[in-house]
Amino acid sequence: MGSRTVLVEDLMERFPHVPREAVFKEDLLRGGVAFDPSALSDNESGEVKPKSYFIFSFDHGTLPELGEAALRRPPEEIILTGGPYDLRRTVVSVRVNPASPYRVAADEEGLLGLYLDGKRIADVGVPPMPEYYRHTLSNGKSVMEVAPTIQWGYLIYLTVFRVCQYFGAKEECQYCDINHNWRQHKAAGRPYTGVKDVEEVLEALEIIDRYDTQKSSTAYTLTGGAITKTVAGRDEADFYGHYAKAIEERFPGRWIGKVVAQALPRADVQRFKDYGVQIYHPNFEVWDRRLFELYCPGKERYVGRDEWHRRILDSAEVFGARNVIPNFVAGVEMAEPFGFTTVDEAIASTTEGLRFFMSHGITPRFTTWCPEPTTPLGKANPHGAPLEYHIRLLQAYRQTMEDFGLSSPPGYGPPGPGRAVFSVSSFMDSLPAEASAGV
Image (cartoon, rainbow, N blue to C red; front, side, top):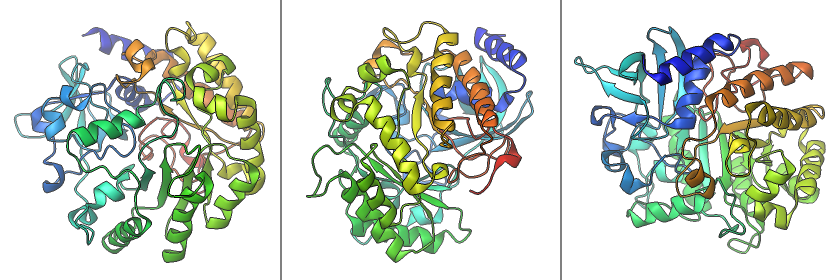
């Protein structure tokens, strides 16, 4: 067996309470997966739902470095089942890495599988092209460009501002490639709308609502780059909020409305609530004070870590603690040259942050760090954080939730191995299925 197989199996044996599905999922998210040409999509002309690049690249190479995968996009997500590990249904966001020990390829009969160190370890399912992707807006834009869906169709991801006003080395978060992703898509001649018109968004949602007859799409997220000044004459709360207001007026109660924005003052947060937003994600990114200051220089300069946390707690008084769900980027705690050098230290720090928020009834969630190569941390840490860190984080996360009597947060679909659809980390896969108090 190859060394990666040995490592993965050792971690599954050492941490038996972490679902085996989550071990593979975290390894695919942190290190990416290669695609044989037989496993690529035919873009929007085919039968497979292609990767939409909905906000970040989430790839281990730039588009020119991905080869055929840059011309024929890989699927948006894959589902793993079966194989020698008898995997339960596991939805994984696709992060392309041509050098990965994991590879998706078709066998002699044309059936897709996931291979590790040359051995087939799981069957692979790909998302079918949804009917709503086959229709265009009146101006010719695709639904995938304006309102892509992820998490196996559960979530409509509305990146209505495709760049960030934290710009340059002194302001950009050191792990974030939102601005580069915008530049590379424009350079490749791909449609990649910078500021999405609210009427375009509404038209795309009308198409989704009309053709999503199974009502698989349950929530939408409004998000984009930070706004330190204005966009189209609006400050951050009003800019993102006016989309929510228009959506809720046109489609009252159709979807769970979520917004990802900075930690804003309470009066601005109240505006989100008044506009109809149900869930607020004021992401805290990384817990450790020194690392926050180093990795999030713009956020430290404009708001500051302590004020950021105070605003998160204040927002719980507006939305209710259960509906405030700040994200952190799991793994950057161990990024060289400034991060923790041992898994023990990194887990202790992150758990301190989890306990801080969960003691106030706020349940953070996390995205598994993908070290995109155009970011400072990605360049310095092409292999990301150790897999052991990610596995132990899942263990610590679940234990901390149990310590404070919390259940899975709303707006993420069902929890539990074999049931979860949240695709950019395994936190929902690792929670007990009975912990759900709503989707």
